Amino acid sequence: MEGNRSAKAPSICSSRSSPCGAGPSTGNDRLGAMNPARDLKRYLVTGFLVVAPVSITIFLLSWFVGWIDHMLSPVVFTILGRHVPGLGIAVGLALLLTIGFLSSNMIGRHLLEVIEDLLLRIPVFNWLYRTVKQLTEAFTPAGSRHFQSVVMVEYPRPGVHQLGFVTRRVEVETDQGITAHYCVYIPTNHLYIGDIVLVPVEKTIETDIPLQEGVQSFLSAGASLPARFKGLPYKDRGPSA
Image: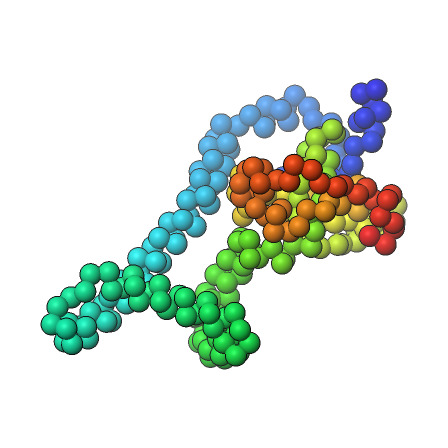
């Protein structure tokens, strides 16, 4: 029975696994996997990636509030004759609310697009702005529009399924012909850290989990995952899937 289960395991190429078609792991491979120096480096990088977004956010908010205080405090002091504590925070919140309101309607979005287009004409700023914008869009629930659907894949070993996000469909050409694969992003400990695996389309199981709920399930470590959801294997959804 164990042999039959192994034979049915999906052929999945992972960015973190051994190359496709490689033979079974040897004792040396297992020893190589237990590398303290490599594990320490991986833990340091993972810790940095976890802490960096929070640290950068706090730094930017502090700078933003301080900048507003620096700009407005002299004006307010001239008018009122005294400093107003928390002025930067209050004005900053009001400014963010105004921008959020403008971006939620057509006229406001058009105005923001015009301002964005002008800012993108600045040589160095345009590169920094595009990079930060892509990161924030990709790694937040609002960026879930980059995901196409939530699927289940048998990974990393037979009998174990993981949820992942389909980001695109690709075709892989080999000596046996051309096969369709889904590019599936499987988050690990945080939404912005994970594996990218190529899974044959017929080895995926479509779910009825909405994208937003799929993102929230990873952010909540599975606590917000629906108690019951439907899974539709490839044979039941047709070759056009």
